[in-house]
Image (cartoon, rainbow, N blue to C red; front, top):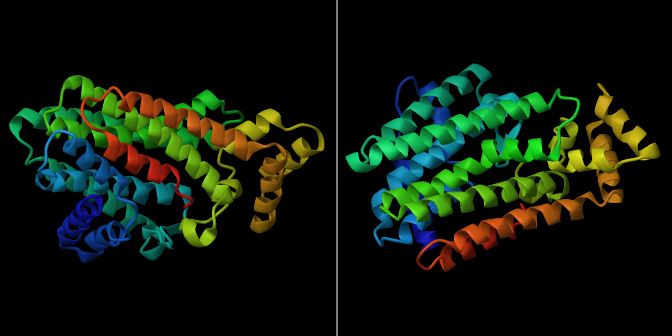
Length: 319
């Protein structure tokens, strides 16, 4: 059933023109949307809805709106991060140019609102309120992420809050949206949102880990990109807390270097992470958030086994 839902999402994406002219404005949107991905967010919408109703195909367009918003954030994030690859393909600003990517992202967000406008009157205001809160928090998280690049010290708590905003709240909204559309009990809407936020933090921490330790062929992004960019990920924050002596000197030298061989930097910093046991520390923190998430899920009425199994499959991924 999950595969059938994903096919319906893909069909909806393929059939969504977003706009026609100028072609150079809308083609980047179609390009990015068709690059694939796990489609985790629309599937979470559909699975949350399916806890209460059996006609999930009726809300495919709204689930796809969430995927469009997610891809809008990726398009703009890639510009800010100067990322060369997205899902193994050139990013929009690399394939076209920065100005086109900015405008395409802008109109993409407008189209998301268009996709929500056909909601029933009794749901429209609540959905838009929840979506607007989520969208604003995503922007807040991205701003914190950029500010952390030049901040001398970032604490673990500050970092967790940043990824909660930038990444996790959208998973929470996806599940909440499915519950709202199914007219689920208010308590379930809240519990599902909390489940999404907590596993979202866990997923982002896992992405931090995979950015350093994944197989390049499977990962679809540049392995070691966070190290090259000095991004203050959970791994770097914990390393800076623990590092001492010669290793501290070496790590600080790499962090302050303006000119360097990227491959050598990735290798050297990774070796420091290994020596400090950073992968195991990160894995433990990831597990903490996933367990908190499943505790929230246990408060939801109905049979959540399907949703739990889907989440565990994602947790086990290595790319």
